[in-house]
Structure formats: structure tokens, C-alpha cells
Length: 388
Picture 1 (cartoon, rainbow, N blue to C red):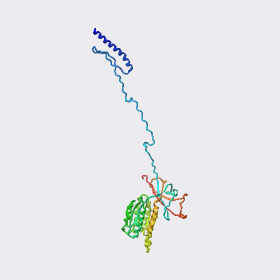
Picture 2 (cartoon, helix red, strand yellow):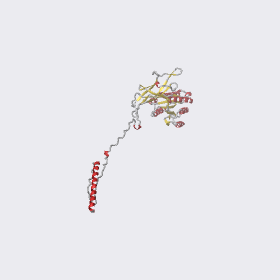
Picture 3 (spheres, rainbow, N blue to C red):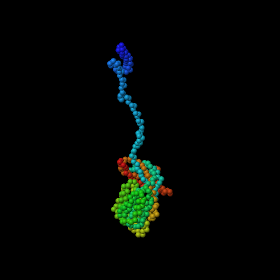
Picture 4 (cartoon, rainbow, N blue to C red):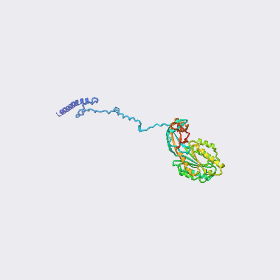
């Protein structure tokens, strides 16, 4: 009785499990049609094992990276006119010509102020140019003191020293000056410097002269050759008797050198005027001295400079005042040439003073008498080359 009852219980349990499986399986299949499930199987393990069911595992496949939507594109950078705040400029090489012009009265060598831009007529190779700017400037100078220091008359040496010291006292801190002496040859005491102590030491060293010869033509020729290598306007202050003894260079050659050297103005101060005036002998000595002084005057006039022959030391201050008035007060003109080619050619320049109607400017003194004047300016310039 016990054994049949146990078997019936087992069969009843298996039937109930089968019915439960029949109810659950359709629902599972309906929810996951794409995933097959294992069918139940009746397995009996000996007398105790019942049916074992396995509904399987629902696996969700991992999405591939290619299936993910691409990220949205980055916003475009705003377009601006100057990226990174950079500043750009356009350079146009337009030549500008600057002219230093002095207008001096012929009678007293005074500077003429008050001129306006319309009073300046500038011709370049005969073509009128439009002057853009005119102003008066106090400019520094670059000068050579060329001193006659020879073993001849004490009075000549003393006059030279007084004149040299007078010019030294008129210098300014931004002036560049070189000191040279000459007798039978030239001697450089100091090169160009704006140190007044150096210049003073050079002048104080003039104590014992050497040769008695005064080769002024050779000395001036060499000085012109040295200054021609310096840019800008240069001045030569020649202090001496003007007499020449044994120069290798003739007067004609030195005059040609003066004419061919641009941007150089020569000022001369003759020494020994009082001795010559007081000389009672006259004759050849007087004629030689007058000829020498006339040569100094010629050197100055060819370059637009001034020439003085002071009798007394007290005259030197007034002489140097005129020199400073002539070389420091200048009209500074600028214009853009109509010929803008950078070809390195030489251009001829002429400056003329005109009135409001374009006629030559007439000057009068307080009494209505006409005054003659001189316009001192360079007569040419060299155009730049493309590589400059």
C-alpha cells in the first residue's frame, strides 16, 4: 500500500508541473519572439528526480560604436577682419627731398626771417615742385677748424688763437667739431667730437710751431676731401693769413675742388690785418698779403660763406655772431619730387624767392631802399637707388 501511494503522488506532482509549464511557456514566447527557449524535458534521475526546465537567458546585444549617432559639429568660428588682433600696414616708398635754405642780406649778412611757403619757388631739373612744408630751425653744425700754425709772426699766431677761442666759445653741446692745423703739412689734433673739453685741449696744445711754410692750398684740398665723406651740411672755418708757399696743389685745382665738393660752406678769418695796416714798408709784402686775403674771400664766396679780416680782437664776437646767425637759422623745406624714380641720378635744384604774383621777391629797408640778398642752398642732390 505504501509503494503504490508514493508512485501516484509522484505522477501527480509531475502532472502539476507540466500544467504549470504549459501556462508559462506561451507568455514567454509572446514577449521574446526572437529569443528561442529550451523545451522542457522529462528527466528522471532514479526514483527522486522530477522534470528539469530551462527557460534560457535573454541576452541584449551590445550596440556597435558605428550604430551610435555622430556628435554634433562644433560651431564655426566667427569671421573677423583682423584675426588675433593683428595690425597690418601698407608701406609706400614715396621719396621726400629736404632742403636747408639760408636767406642772407648781402650788406650785413643778417638772416631774413618771416618768409612763407608761397615765397619759395623750387625747380628740380627745371620743373616746378610743390613745397609741402617750410619751417625755421636752429640746427647743430658739423665743422672743421683749419688753423694756420706756422713759425712766422707772433701776431699771426696770436690772432689765430683769439679767433679759434672765439669760435670755441660760440659752440653748443650738439655741435661736432674737428681741429686741424697746417704748416708744411696738415695735422689732426682732434677728430669730430661734441666734447668741448677735447676741443679745448687741442687748442691749448698750440704752443710751439714747427715749420714756417704755410701750404694753405694743400691743407684746404685735403680738408675738402675728408669732409666730402660726411653726409649733410659741413662747415670749414679757415683761420690764417691765406698765404701759400710750397703747396703741390695749385690755386686753380683747389678752386675746382671747392666747386666740385657739395654741401660744404667755408668761412674765413684773416689774421695779421693790424700788422699789415701798421706796416710802413708797403711794397711787395702788402701786395702779397692783400692777394692772400682776396684768396680767402674767394673761398668763402664760392660756397656761400662769409669772410672777415678783423683789426682788433673785440671784433671777433660780432663776426662769430654773424656766422652763427648764418649757419644756425635756416629755412627747412620739404617736397615730393615729380620725378619719383629711384634711379640714383643727380637732380639739379634751384631755389628762388617770389612774391604773391610769382615775380622775383623785392626787399626794402625801412627807408624804402632796395636790399640785395642771397639764397644759399645746395644746387643738386642724388636720388636714392631701389636698394637703399
